[in-house]
Length: 85
Image: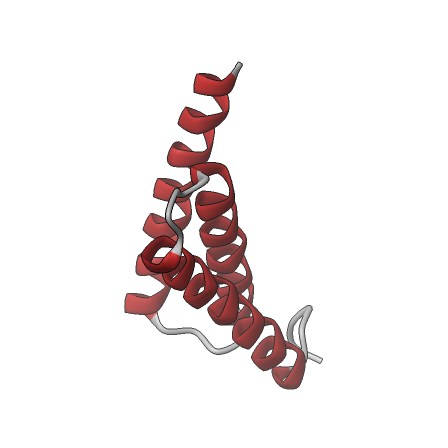
């Protein structure tokens, strides 16, 4: 085994991450009032799962996108948590 994840596990983790990000996008478009903690948490977890998947199925453009996506989601999550405190 060359990595921590098998190709099948990487696919499953990546699909779950994608599903979380699609759910966050749908939530942001369908909810009357958005809880930005939930929105950013779903995006951050989804991006991190896709990053894990990309360690097995590497693609530079996708990896860069997911790193930036996770960083923006972390910033937004931190901002919304600090606002509530």
